[in-house]
Image 1 (cartoon, rainbow over the protein chains, first blue to last red):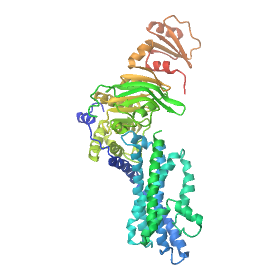
Image 2: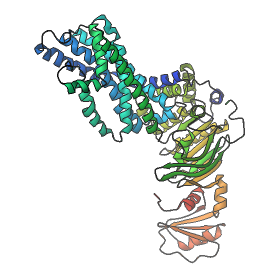
Image 3: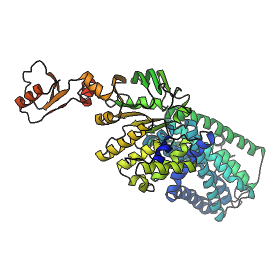
Image 4: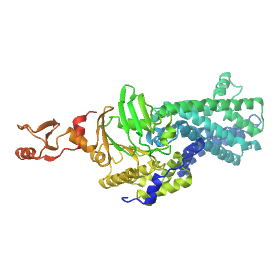
Length: 274
Length: 306
């Protein structure tokens, strides 16, 4: 360590061409999360993938035997539930990534300090993070789709677009997770959010039963919930049944993404730079 | 940006720089000029504002008032242009513990904007320079404190910075590792690196710094080359005694200070202190040159001021 090699010294002095463009910045952040996540892939991915499959087994296969024989909305009950679970699994993976995951990186691991000591800007850091969550969401949607198909779900060929809906859904919920995290001071605070927000989202967005036409208040609530819209899109793909309402769901999903994306970046900038 | 190191204008300029957290003025009206290739050591008690000052320089926080330029550019507004040429070694090690040493450097190299090929070349060179090549594939958790610290330094150099910021680089490390790190830092300085350093170790500050700034309560209270500081503010010798029952009568050339259970007797020549030493016959007494630590304690107070 005393006498360094001349080549090393020259290299340390040397001028490097740095890629400081947006694409490379997002890639750098994405790559970090990808590398860390896949380092312990089995431990990271197994539980969140098993959970939707437990729901599928218990509800679609088990309880499904007692559901009206024709299923709902022209889909068998297994297919109906599968069309919701492919999307809710994307939501869960994204929301955990940017609540508990982001909080641990922010407060305990100080990952963002390291990122912020480079040229990276706060929005680049968190767009990169949401893109990673979106990647995970797309993969989870695909895996849940394939497994539920193996267990009797029968979607139409349009389901090849499900990963895209999964990607958009997880980007949205990654943004929502960041907004929540920006307010959280202690990690225990998240339990209010998971129990008070995520669980009702999961049950009242039409994953397990058609929401429409039972109670007016439930219709209103469900239409306001962000998860309802991607599930409706997924269901349209599953049954190849597209209506003007489908287009409206797409529009609402993008509107949600635009608003939450903007808010997430604004809030995280404030949180990280203070 | 090509001739950053070449021009002789100050690399960092601060005028009345202030950072306030609520009521607390963490940095309070600091004036600062850091020349290229200078190594400046920031000393000060915990909470003096050293780390906050560093964080202002690399745009991790926004100033409340005053002026600050780095490379002639404005932090926050021009963070991309500034931080492309800055490397930071944080007080807390924040490497990704899931990854191995080489992977940790790779992800950081990508943040910096290196392509994979250049990253691999620089990682190999830096690991070699810091004697870490054998540990390239080791998980962070499996590394010793000294290795992790060297890895933090390697990480800060990936982008070939013009300015290196080190926040307590050798706190908690054994003497061998500290000397190895100092040697590496002197190496960098010889190559033209500008270094800002915060430390609680007087020997570290003295070993590395051209200039020392002592901070207290957000202000710079003293500044100068390490040896000049001692000469300018203290007598040359000090007799330090602990557990003295009563202070003896002193002749005119000896100055006395009392703090805690210790008494300090200062003089510009050795004989009067030697005589005092023998006269006291105290068990815990040491006669030595006055050093930076005495200056530091004189100006920041000998009691705990937390």
